[in-house]
Image (cartoon, rainbow over all chains, first blue to last red; front, side):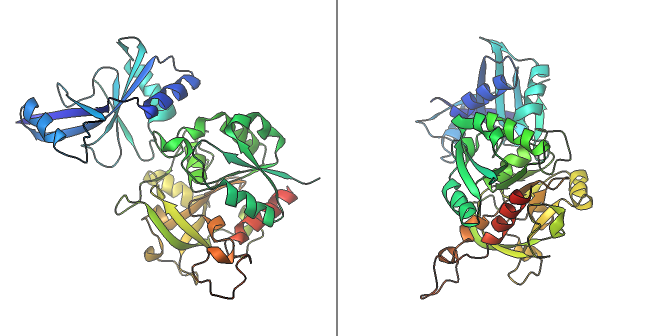
Length: 130
Length: 256
């Protein structure tokens, strides 16, 4: 047992991610692609296979027609990704930015994206990859 | 020459019709301006941001609309002293744009109307809000009576004011709390607040008083037929209490 996280993302087009992309570009960020996912963090994570089964069995999190589940290597944001936490630290929203095809954004770019759009510091907190 | 009021329509706005109708009933020269007509906005003298779900509340309520081209013109107008009123989603947009409370740089919000408490559910209930600044603090409220109590409908999932402690102190000390939730007779206690909003706040005003953000909808309690106490035989098209704020807004626009 260890801490793990899963990313639940849409496999259909994500209009919110696209709108974020257009808005970030309007704000002057040279971003090529934006992906969004719901992160769920588990304290007592079993094996990845059991974890996926657990998520896929929760109808409040997962709809097989819309979602795909990825078990992350650790319990931290992936490269080019920021987690935005509001009320529940175990359920942040992940935004993953690419500045070119296959090239994740730097932490510097992520910080600018958070400051200008993705995070309202009055009610949210941003967690960056190390 | 009549002062012209623009009622902004973002993709997802849904309260524009009753807002325009009430402004006109109050004597205002109000016009709808859709997002595709943003370039028209500088020619208007005042702006109203109605309720709805601009851009489907993507990212956060009001976050995308705050960066829309329409808001470039609203921000420029507000800096010139034009009056701006935001209701519900309009209020959320004004906070995301940093125009209200206006204690930080533009588009760097220091507060938010966010998920309701104690449970993050949609709230749809009749409320009263009480003017908690002197009427003359804002040209928008100048024609209201001191401590005026205004009926309205709260209809939101994200209407709870939240901010860091230092920013809440700024709101208190800077006379930014324009309206608090109250009971019908004007008494204020936590049971009057439907969503655990910080300090019982229903509405905030900026430092110079020309931009007001109010979460509940007074325009949905503007005629008798909107009112929960209506009775058979009442004049259903008579103005109701919610019209008072819009009358005061229109008077402020005409004076400006």
